[in-house]
Amino acid sequence: MATRRRIRTIIRKTTAGGGGGPAPGGTINWGPSFGQSAGDDDSSFNVNAALSLDTVGLIGNTTANASATMPELGVVGNTIASGAATMPDLALVGGVTASGALGAVFAIDHMIAKEDTYLDQASAGSSFGGSATLLSKTSTLGGNNAQVAYLAWDLTWVPLTGTINSAIIHVWTQTSNALGENGNYAIHTAVAKPFTEGTATWTANEPITGTNTETISKALTTTLTEQVLTLNATTLASARGRWLWIRLPGTATLGLSTITTASKESATSGNRPYMELNVTL
Image (cartoon, rainbow, N blue to C red; front, top):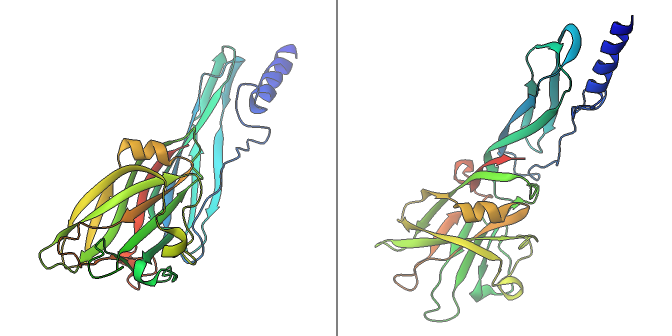
């Protein structure tokens, strides 16, 4: 009888978190919550969870089964993601203690830009957040006709203790310059939301500033073409718990050429700007 009581005591302590495991009932609380706003229903992501448990020791010869489940993640839009982390049978013979550690890797396949707009010097008080295309033009030749395009992603849900393993942005861009020119994608990060697309104007918001982590230059043509921007380690470290956005001017080779980028409001869903993101929380 004494041996049975001893075994029951150890089992209760283990399942109650005495060894660093989940609370009674096996519940593991996941956080923080995150998702896309209404209208961004073509965003999607997968979740992979890993649960590791060190040696569990009990007096006597005992076999225990353990599992950790993750509730469904509701995404605003048309996507539901769910996942489960399971442990194999544990043969518990002799020994002393139990301890556990939980780590989750979020592989987000298609994270649509949260905000995007362009600002027009010639229409300094107007907002263009609902436009299906974003315009940028660096030259002021012949008057105040410069334009700047912005695209932003909300990464404030990534804790500073987490790690952004990789981030790749896909945008569809073209130029009016028949000879070609470069699109200069300046990557910025900041704690606060950099702009609100429905109200941003040249007068009120230009220039939008933050930490400039890198600039990626891509050769453009007159055909709307996918540009793939792989962000560097400096940007990945700076983006944790922050907003990340692109400022897009061009080289303006001929002075008046315009760069056009498909926005998240584009009628062609396959041309909407999105990010691939891999994060360990």
